[in-house]
Image 1 (tube, one colour):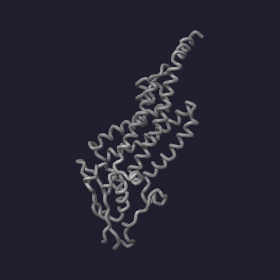
Image 2 (image 1 turned 30 degrees about the vertical axis):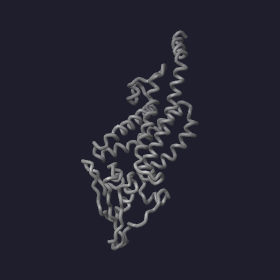
Image 3 (image 1 turned 120 degrees about the vertical axis):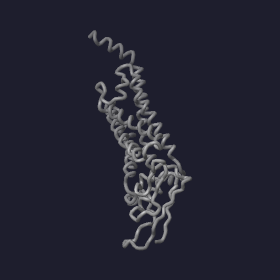
Image 4 (image 1 turned 90 degrees about the horizontal axis):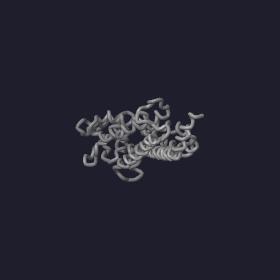
Length: 279
């Protein structure tokens, strides 16, 4: 009985404080969840050219970075809040290293997800100093980080008894996010069949390979900002070399016409122009 007195005194002293800190942690977690999903959705819409088509504006990548910064800020606030608790506070080691000092699995998922997203954010500023293909592989880990963080959020909701909120709001946000993320990796002809992309006329070869339309590619160097999205869409046609010059195939073969159209559509600066010519 006497051994429980110090614990009861500590709980009385830190109860209101810890309740406030946990409330801040919950709010920041929900804001991080929402802005994280918005960041992924908006990034996909920009990369595919859908955002430009919807808004009629070019160069929307800054808005993607703003959303990403907000998501990382709220996520970091959520993590730091647990170090401010008076009872069962997280140490710096527990906050940075998964499973440190008996850390739980759901905490480890959150730590991994946040650290990967922070790494992606830092390397985004170093894109021009890193070989593009390596940077792209690292940037694509953001999809994995989002998935890991979503699982962390759901486990946390179960542990904290707030699953009803996640079912209502979290699932509503998650479904369109997952749909758009999957659509990002589907080939253009599949998106056309699904009605998510309008078919574009021309540039298809004749069945016998003779005659018909051919395609010329040109890039406006004044508009091109070397984002490298064209290389992601059509690596066989576009390539950013080490000195940040863009090399591209001016007359692609017929089997690359669809990829060329996808690259032109995805370019946020609308720097790629396709011209039809008669063979």
